Image (cartoon, rainbow, N blue to C red; front, side, top):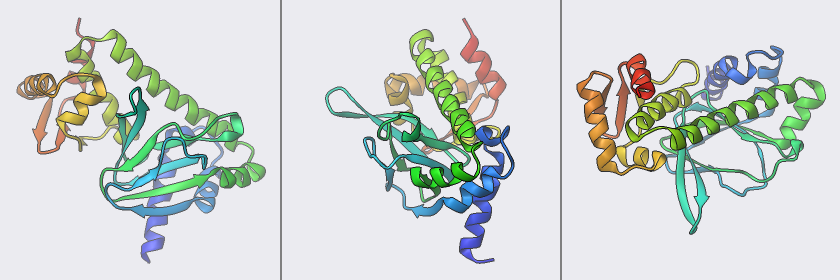
Length: 233
């Protein structure tokens, strides 16, 4: 098997497990792969930037990416991470606008890019595609609302536990990532806390057997325990 064939086989496996395609016609995933473009990007490279007009979908096949957006004062804020299996993006065909986030690779990554033009070609042959895209937009909205609810409604310790659980599902939508490759500073930025505060809570979680801390990574040991910590009054 050539490198290109191996990459396409990996992408096919990822699409076959994608949550937003599970209830859709089985021919959609092969059509998306056929019309999409596989690209390998180095760590630090941008897949696309906030404000870009070339909308469409981006599927993480290998590696991991971080999502950033502009805040007041021309400040770029880290919003979330996404790993293999995650799909990011939107289409102008539903009245949308330019890209909403900047996507930057955290490590060497294999991505499947599906442009608006490619979505149009798929949709012309398989109209069920638009139902699948609507399901994806709903999924993205649900994740965004979950993050907003955490920020508004949870005290710091519970907020951290809830975000660790959400990130594990974002990094691996199929079943939850065991290891989150992120440092404490970006994690603190995402939930509006100081690094010192986050470190203190993480050390307590580690002592309770919920996580294991490593250099630039956090291993989830007890998702159920983290869920109880997130729900504690």
